[in-house]
Picture 1 (spheres, rainbow, N blue to C red):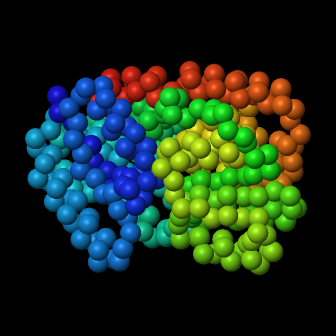
Picture 2 (picture 1 turned 120 degrees about the vertical axis):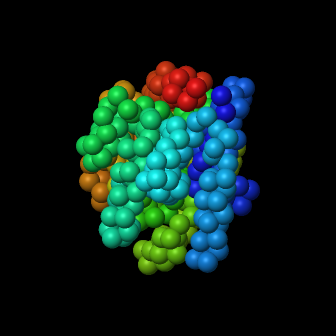
Length: 349
């Protein structure tokens, strides 16, 4: 059995966080001794002409290589599935397991509605020709069923590679008690501006923002406008080994996002002992349903976030140790990569 992984997002030395969960899945399958190759895009930077050339080459490689494989495991269906959507109209339908991740199937704030209408048609066809569809969470399973008319028996809930607990763990380093953190894309739907605005009421706190995106310059300007620029440090995207150290350094991870398909970053942070303050969205309330000790903020306003951050600071050391162990136990049972991979293998092989 030969498997070809296809993805238009994959990490590289210059972009270590670009689709890193796809790389995690690839390595997990490879380490299990299965025959797996990949056709991927590992660089999303450059001019429109450069990006167009990258995609043309990507699609050509897909068309040339796919006939030599038994199963195609395709990530980010709105882009990576385009060749197979076209081929399906002339009767060519290989065995496909598609894996949706978020913005490929859902319109996020800050993105064009007209472009999404085209994307939606591609996704609708892509999902219909897929033998199985992998989604990151139960909330996203419901979304795909409702929005695209996919039957539940066609869907596998698999948390995007899960958490490698040999890597993401507590380290014997000192945690900075008044250091807040955010790690992820700097786009409008992530609402990083809310964290920055909350700092106005938290003059003794500092924030580290890890990541890149089209909102970065606007966020830097916002720190200056609010007079909190000395409290905020912007850091480039980090590799997973760097993130482990960072999660162990920060006190609280803040994630006021409008939408997440899973929210792997908060789960990784909890595995490293950080507290988390999250927005009230289905992917995060799913964590509450699993009995995680997390703080959910219902309003997307700075004041409730600053209040939640201060409440987290009041937790006694012994109580915090119990919370960390409690959350770790849930991660071991539900999100450990060694546990979650079994279900994916049953679908792929």
